[in-house]
Length: 511
Image (tube, rainbow, N blue to C red; front, side):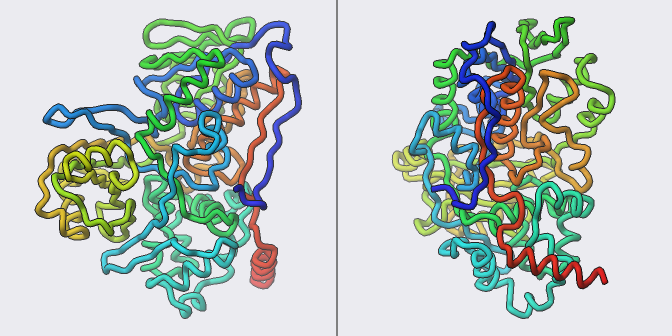
């Protein structure tokens, strides 16, 4: 059930299907992550001929899944780590409903506990659903937040949290980092680790490197702007099996041609205002439109190799994009179980380099089967903003695991897979104004991805899906075809009372 206060962003009217046009348009979608798959789905459903390029051998991008082997030859599922499918991800969930209307490929986690270095624990279980009661209840029952802390908060500095408005909040706060913002409003230091660092970790970054506008928008999305809360769903199987293979079948049933292991080298513009897309193998596709839905580095490489795309100012904005610090994912197959009362997902604060622990056999089918067969467990450790020696980071994370879950100290490691990547978009202070948008100065060329600017209250996987749909809608309008509806949480603070109080505080302090 969608929050009744969610906002509909209707698609533009137009023809129902490309078969009603004199000629069927072709669109090349470059990148088969969430953004590219969302765009491809929206286009193919309107009868557009879609050519989908993906550099990896699997779909899903940073939420992809694949197979690997343990040292004994046992095949096991692998991916880049835990992903939470929040109830506010309306557009992503609607894309997934194309292949599973009931979303049975997802299962809820009933809690998301957070602990710090002193053993203090926060939980999102049992919170009221109605804002702002949800945020108040969370703060007041937190061991790191007391009523006296509420009195000390600088109401004027904190007003933007209560009166979020996208994109105006970015105009106001994007020049400030999240850590400075929390310090300036006198938010308790201990509570920052548990109550707010969870948001910066979601962006694979630390508060000092994250825009305060992103922090405020996340607080709006998950607390003050939505009754969906911070309880989320997870995939019941590895991402390839649960999500993307079924969606690939759906796309192919609509005529989409999917090319994997086909990184695109460049895109050129013809004299007829069409595009020629060329992959690394020299294969070409002539297209009436192009969606570039790659990660930042690949986008920059394609634009650099495609000298006739866009104008100098736009190319400069693409070139100025950056990536977040590296993160490390360490998946361990242990020869004995963790305690049955351990949560499926545990966030940590003040325990570097460890940021969270997942017990995959609590929810992922492949890990559950391995655990049942062997009597062991599958545990995953994450370290965000983890620049440095990966081997040392992994040793330190395992040490933290042993301290938090002592039963793992005697466990033998049957298998271990470690990934270190640095390909998530940078969302640093000052980035928003320069970030490229879905629309580009090149007619027929659009961008999509979670690093692309869109002036709606969305983030993370939902930003990827929403920009993908927005990119498709832009091209559909160009072809005179009907667009797709999108939904978000409210674009400004949900509570009139909080908005009034925030405005009153600002008026009083400006006198």
